[in-house]
Length: 344
Image (cartoon, rainbow, N blue to C red; front, side):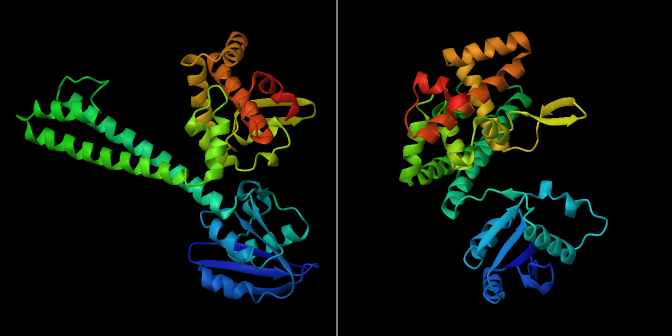
């Protein structure tokens, strides 16, 4: 078996092939294009395994390499101290070190979603970006009105009919009306794009059925279920709920030495999109929907610690429920929800 380390950049890929003894067989710089990579990979001697760091360009490189390599392992760059902390660093050295780490089976591996799943996930992330942009334009409209001292109904200003009628009352200030209409036009375009993205997401029948199953959980809405399904994809990769909670960034980093343990704030090594969605869902479940089981968790933790810690505790409970329902493939019931922490 040969081992390939690849250092990926926007325009080039530096590849180094080593045998099982660590002897370099081949070194080459490849253009970062599918055709060039395909041509090079087809000429690599013998069966081989490949590895490279997770980057913006990882997806298409992974899809090409799995067609040629026995196995492809994507490395977590945050855990590659052997490369990042070294005194001398270059593309050539990095590719060789990656090949050595693969050869001795010490690659801190990242989970890679299938190609179709990654495209669905990109659609959902694009939808989140559209929502953020919509919020920016809504804030721009209200900001322009406040700047000019104009009174408006905050609960209705972003509704189409009310905005049209409201704009007519401002016809004396044509420049302000034009600016408001510019922002309103962009808001409508972005809102239509968001609706189209949601329709594209639901063209996958398996995803639709999974979302319907997850939304049977109290406090879990459509967007929370979609985010969980597409960011996690395979729930069975978590052997227990503690690992899923860690992936969602709902626990702190552990620092223990000589029997002394220190716990800090929530770890930054997490899926930030899933963390944000779960925290927001927890607030809604407790303060708006009043889900009894989650309210009890919130009140108990708030009495012992504080409100922020209580919200995180509710988010952890939601993760346990999501993982249990997703693994079992059955709708949520009170019995399987309560048992999720110990059985999943």
